[in-house]
Amino acid sequence: MKIKILIVPLLSCLILSLLVSVWIHKYRDFRVEPRVAGLDGRPEPAAEETAAASNDLEGKLETFDGSPSASTASWPGFRGPQRNGVFHTDVELARQWAAQGPKKLWQLTLGEGYAAPAVHNGRVYLIDYDAQRQCDAIRCFSLDDGKEIWRYSYPVKIKRNHGMSRTVPAVNDDFVVTMGPRCHVTCLDAKTGELKWMLDLVKQFGTKEPLWYAGQCPLIVDNKAIIAPAGTKALMLSIDCASGDVAWTCPNTMGWQMTHCSILPVEFAGKHIYVYAGSGGVAAVDAENGQLLWQTSEWYLRVNVPTPVDAGQGRIFLSAGYNKGSMMLQMEEKDSRIEPQVLFKLPPEVFGADQQTPIFYNGYIYGVRPNEELVCMDLNGKVAWTSGSENKFGLGPYLVVNDLLYALNDEGTLSIIEAKPERFSLLAKAKVLEGHECWGPMAFADGRLLVRDLTTLVCLNVGE
Image 1 (tube, helix red, strand yellow):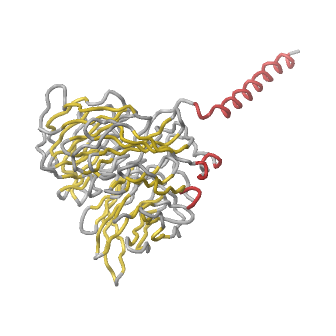
Image 2 (cartoon, one colour):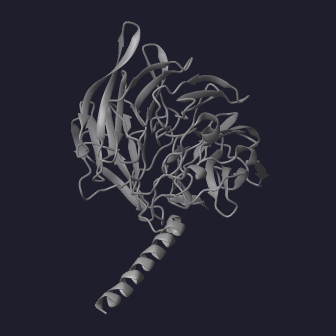
């Protein structure tokens, strides 16, 4: 009798466990997750989800009544004109703000994400995701008032995965190049939005879609789009923007996979070089012919996010989250070859950047370490100052204009700090966004600062 009494609840528990397992399996994509930029346990996309059918990507161009600004200022891609997060301007910048902060010139509602704008010839370019229509949307706005000028869309199904779009376009006078969340690289006419060409890196080059979608920002040099597919068929590519023809390919002999890093252009020993941090290490590629110059596994992280930093005189500074810390490489010329040597490594409590790329400015490196403090450090790894526990900046972006460092925290408070090594000097701060996850890189053009949170883009006047 006792045995029968025990069997009934045991069977009930087994049936309930089975039902819960089926429910979890069926609805696993709808579970609530903390939105943090890190290894939070989300599984990688299933194989059947990672390849969009390129022959189904029939794009659509729409035009609107927006008009380009007369401004000729340019922030042509990730981290600005020199790809270093630094800009110099003749515009007089405010060092103090009234209580309400800098004047808001315009704002736009966007799809969820951290994709950031590029600015060129009076136009603001952004890759967005239209969840209702299920398509990537490459959008062009007026710098003056934020009115849309044109939009080029193509169908791609993606799910919420800590935001959707998260890259910055590259633009020059003639072309704009973007990378979508699922590794579609698109080249359009910068003025009209007309399609020039499109690549599906997953299908064509064997790229494995990164966790939380693609975070690599394209680069344009001499009308060539420079991309790192880090797939089975190529580590890096140079593509002619006008024709779509591949100018050169650097083979991926190491078998690395794509990270969230972008490509860093540097000059050393009379060569133009592209540096990229893939899943298995750091590599340098000759910009003229795609030849692999060197590679090292002294630094590697599968989900590396911050881009390598040119610290001058052949030094490459690397940093990351996940308890990785930072490292300084030195390129050296030996017997007509270039080799990297490790100068020093630092633990994360001294310097490590979880998400944003540090800035090298006037001989010092500025960045936010894992405890959320802003840090100024010399090139020997010695910390000059920190912002202290009372001034924290989270995972938000920062850039330097003249001698002012603009830093945005997670919840939308913008600060001005002097970019000088003597001491931490906070000049002003103000709430400029009402949302959260203000993680997209900022852009500066003609006294205007463009900042975003998860769903809103705002243009601020930071001039006097």
